[in-house]
Amino acid sequence: MFKKKLWIYCLIVVCLAVLPELTGCNSKTLQDPRNFNIITGPDGNLWFTDNRGNKIGEISPATGRVTEYIIPTKGCYPIGIAAGPDGNLWFTESTGNKIAKIAPSSGKITEYNIPTQMAAVDGIAAAPDGNLWFTEYLSNNIGSISPATGAVFEYGIPTGQCGPASIAAGSDGNLWFAEFSGNNIGKISTAGTITEFAVPTSDSYPGAIVLGADGNLWFVEQNSNKIAMISPATGKITEYDVPTAAAGLLGIAAGPDGSLWFTEQNADKIGKISPSSGTVTEYVIPIAKVAPNEIAAGPDGNLWFSQTGVSKIGKISPVTGKITEYNIPNN
Image 1 (cartoon, rainbow, N blue to C red):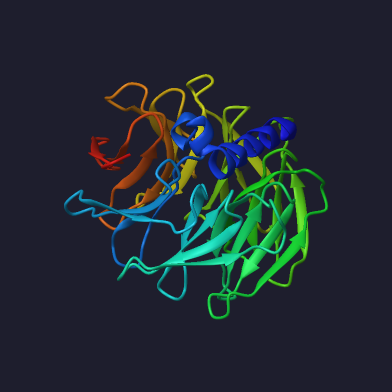
Image 2 (tube, one colour):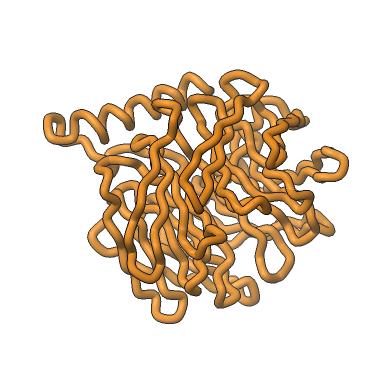
């Protein structure tokens, strides 16, 4: 599986960074399981990465109005995005090999180079030490960047070719990350010490990971079709089956109701799981073939999710399950 994703990343690099004018290839012709990430910004809007348009977008939860900002580096393929302690939004440029920030007040974007070439930076999260921590999928590193200085440090993961992807801050002060190809959940201290925990189900392809209201880290298992949680205190992993077979689990977020909400890309559904009982409830998205991707809790009490099958951002009410869609312009 690592070789397969390596091939995908290499294809993206060629199409987006080398041959767009010669071949007519652009990011709209490529399918990747992480086309848009979405989070709540410090300004009360939802911010997302638009790698098809090479932009960072924001959507107002009050009006549904979408505004987008062009990233200076062409074909940079933005993926992860996180709210930084400095009030900016920080994001990864996978093929641009950069970490960047955007000021929500002005839309100004500043970019910082990654020391390791072709690192394929992916997930990013704010940490208790005041830095932003990120994953390097191809170079097999976890990195950190100082929002004050832009200084970058990198730490090698013990398991080779493990494909670190999503990353989240835990309740224990560590950063927790999913090893997509290594079939592990890893944690790294802010001092750079890494510990790995094997996922019980083999070839599960652990993906998005998030801190739950119960203090545990919750993550999706893309290949085994399960939602799982790991205790930061013991490292014990518990897994729960999703009712819909081959659902295509991708994003996961902690909801205001205490549940963990997740996306089912293949099934065109949004699901939720109770951390206390493990009960899973699913909601069908009214529009077919929208391919829901990442999901985040909004400041309005709803869950907002990105979609790769259509140029729309959706939201679902945790109270009623009602789903509303908003168009992304010029995408």
